[in-house]
Picture (cartoon, rainbow, N blue to C red):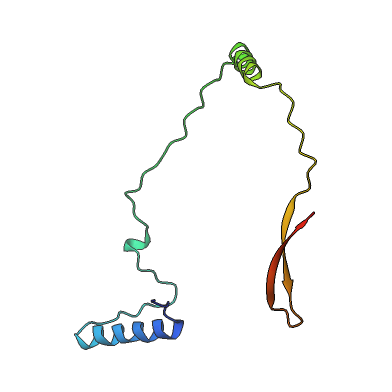
Length: 110
């Protein structure tokens, strides 16, 4: 089972990757406070602009809604629910010893 790496392990791995990068001849460019890595200080200018269109007017349809409601009412059953039996239900009860260990289970009427 693989366990997730801790933050200290992730930091060590990242610092090792930076050292390997620098050992291969890579360089890190230092930026002054407030400077950004954006080209000309702008974000991607080729973004998609979605224009808001006017919403279509809605036509009320009370006759359609009324027919749907009539079908829904016709489909419902009008039978009465069956009463529950008067027989007592049995449930399982666990018997414990003096130390809290389970000894056996019995069935009792509730």
